[in-house]
Amino acid sequence: MSLMNGNVKIRIKFFGALRDLTGLDEFELELPDRIHCDAIFNCLRRKFKQLGPVLQHSTIAVNGMYAARYARLHGGDIVAVLPSFGAD
Amino acid sequence: MFFSKERIDISAFLPKAGTDADAVSMYAEFARGSSDGRAVKKVSIESYVEMAESIIRRIVDSMPAQWPVHRVDFVHRIGTAKPGEALLVAAVRASGRTAAFEACTYLIEELHRAAPIWRKEHFADGTSQWIGGAAPEPGEEPRGRP
Image (cartoon, rainbow over all chains, first blue to last red; front, side, top):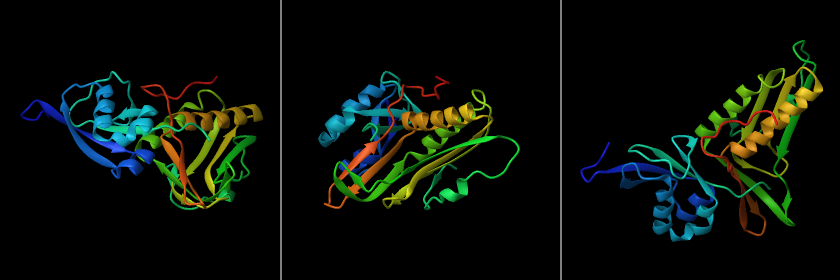
């Protein structure tokens, strides 16, 4: 559902190192409707400058499915940011 | 449910007599006691459980079409484990050893490739490190038999 300004609310979930570095496991972002997943990375980089290196190696899942960076987001979507550290 | 906060009892996965299959392939991973020369005090295991459950279910459901698999038992620990405790156990019951080995390998490889699960090793010197985490292609579906 769009807000008065045309934006929508997207729920963001952090896991692992991302949660450690921010102290957040879940929060909401207000973004333009149909924005690309890629924009989430840019937004998070601005909001949490400490995440740079970890975000570089993270993927995104939208509503429980891995998403391409060019996929578009809609109001109410749940976006999980999933860091990857490779196999041990 | 493929995840458990409780300590995993590996003996519960040991093959039992049955007539539906002649081979069982078992695989287990354990919390290690040292990593890169540093003593590990404990391991935290974290997952995006709802998503990982769905991915593991798809992996398991895709197995019988590829091998004569009769039963798959799988559990992954979440929470905190001490060194030496099991982090995951899989037991794949199939007709023939090749099918059992291949299907079990497929399950574990796909799990590590696609399921969002992380481990954090806490070292005795007070430091820690994250390991794991999947990096699949968008629109993730289990890969078929190689």
